[in-house]
Length: 106
Image (cartoon, rainbow, N blue to C red):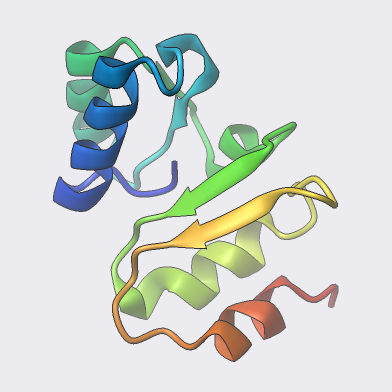
């Protein structure tokens, strides 16, 4: 999970509370570590030091950063993202084509 604001927090809490995902399988990263740590305390999900660490070996990645940060975030992690990982986004107004382009190798 990249970005740990209100939307991501609600999803992660729901996944853990319903047993959809065990917390040890969820890695959290936020540009402000304190925010990720707060969600970790509430859910027992793990905090990753970097976005690259968070996506390494991921089956799915939730992009929950502000819309203006989506391209920068995807570009930063594209080399570490496993080839068949599912990328989900809750960023409002960001076109799929924009995200696809950001994930293409440089």
